[in-house]
Image (cartoon, rainbow, N blue to C red; front, side):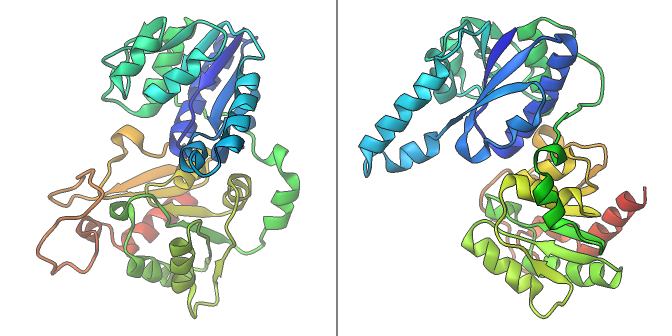
Length: 348
């Protein structure tokens, strides 16, 4: 059985879909998935043994450059469509639930399936599907994906802990050797997409000092220039804090897999750390782990009990400003609490 899966982004959403592939592979031994995914995240699906082919798409880049370079965009789009139409699929499953992802399904050969009007993130997407399935929207994304796959592929929903099932080391042994370290280290995952998800910088500095006193080295990286600048400020004059150049997803996976533990805000690499069973402490202020939190057998969430948390807002509007932590909700998650949590995970 061959299924085309459409789940283009983001990193956290992709990782949340992986346990559903594990369920499907366990239930239907001959099943294979081809996966349509944003080019930025194309490394991730290939790590799962149920994925036969990854079909990268560059919707974000197309949107950005459609005016400045239409000829190149048209050429790349035609190449993408050629890959998409190469096989006849038993099922084309849109697990994204957006209008743009449902339209991608229209270009593939196979019966289109997805979430129904009440279940999809964008309800209009459901009009594109030929088979529609109702899944409770108000539950964790992993449960939603496992439920959707079980309904669409007709097997009983397993009542087991979600198994991500990815194999990182076997695909990138050279990178693994390059990043091995004999000194125990923690990885700080401080970069994220919203300002309100960012743990205060002076907390990271204090946590680094506490962790160094506890006998750990720190490795920290960044993607965007402002994240790199923050990484260097955190590392400033601290001999045991190492700033790592911007890493690919594969390189970060290896860096994490060799770490004693990771501390993360609500970010894609935090989901990755938890998924590969690195002891991971995830910090939640403006958001809440109940719907999209990092899940792993060695992962814990620290959530704020601040009166207005979680606000799910991109901007902190809390006043007055007498609380030094910004966003204010993170005042309930101080560095010592985080250090104790990661040390308990490592010890366990």
